[in-house]
Image (cartoon, rainbow, N blue to C red; front, side, top):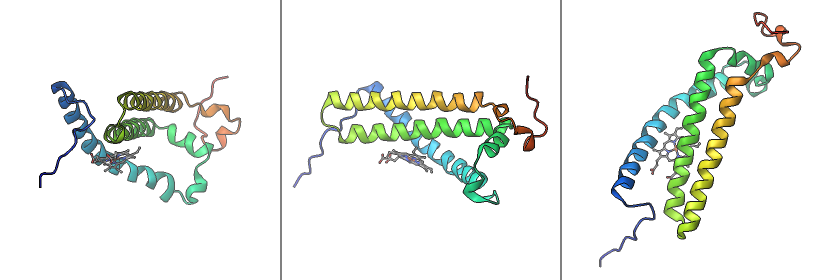
Length: 147
Ligand code: HEM
């Protein structure tokens, strides 16, 4: 007995297929990078600090983002995880949504939310100012604050 596989909902044009191939490769490549970066993230934030999760306070974040290395690291992690997660959700939406208008509406919503989170997160990382804490020199003695 022949098994009939239903047409997938994802767009099927030649250009669409190229795009889907690139998205497929991106999910594998970003997945591999994410494993390493998430292990590093959890080690530095949760495993290595002596007080575990209790260590994550304003001073801990200020100390971390005083280094351009951690600003770039956290920025890359933010962008990769959000684009990977949103593209993964797009796959699920394309697989399970039957009505075309709903598929488009959900996908547009997904990417608008992802773009907003990427912009807000990047702004937080790049504009974070430890000097708003009057006691900042207790844990960052070298820091020079204006005014
Ligand atoms: C820890 C490292 C990670 C690896 C190795 C990984 C790997 C992958 C791969 C290979 C796929 C494609 C699966 C397919 O096409 O059938 C995928 C899908 C997906 N990923 Fe990740 N991923 C990781 C982290 C994340 C993170 C942090 C998020 C959320 C922000 C996420 C959310 C998703 C979603 C929603 C899907 C779609 C699920 C599906 O197609 O069934 N992943 N992941």
